[in-house]
Every structure is written in structure tokens, then in C-alpha cells.
Length: 91
Image 1 (tube, rainbow, N blue to C red):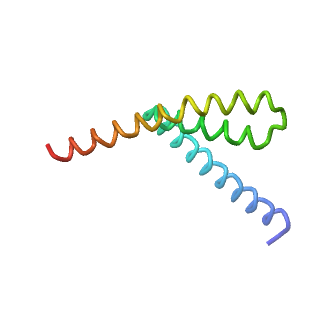
Image 2: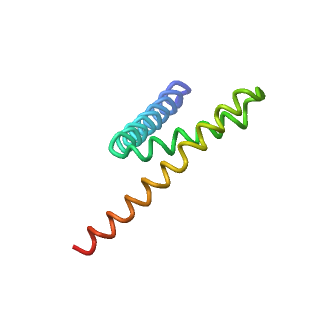
Image 3: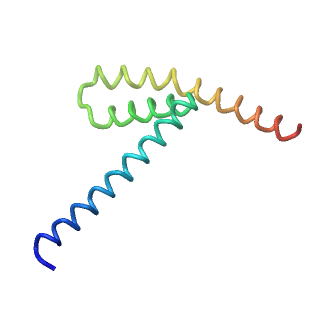
């Protein structure tokens, strides 16, 4: 094989890999759209990362307050979802 053939093969592999990643991201986006609870969880995770990375104390405090409000809501919805699943299994 020539150098060009090798390069072409490598580029084709990269294209395939990127297409797979794109498809995974689409599936992930669809799951989030279908389950708003996941969206809230992702927001909380993003805020936690933001707290870790940010050195501004005002921003940290604001993010901590948002997390303090969102976490109980997420837990409440999760409990309701679990109860509904149990009820659906009984029927």
C-alpha cells in the first residue's frame, strides 16, 4: 500500500468514528427530550462542575442556591416516578 492509501484508510476510520459519536449524541439528546427529569439532573451536574471550576465566590453561591432548589425537586419527581413504575407493574 502506498502512503496515500494508508492516509485514506485512516481518514475513513476517523469519519466512521465521528459518525458513531454523532449518532450517540443524537440518541442521548432524544433521551433527554423524552425524560425531563434527566434534563434537571444534567443541569445540576453542570452547576456542580461550574462550582468546582469557578473561583468567583458570588457565582459559587448562586450555583449552590440553584442546586439547593433543584435537588429536592428532582428527588421528588424521582420518587413519584418510582411509585408510578411500581403501580404499573402491579396492574
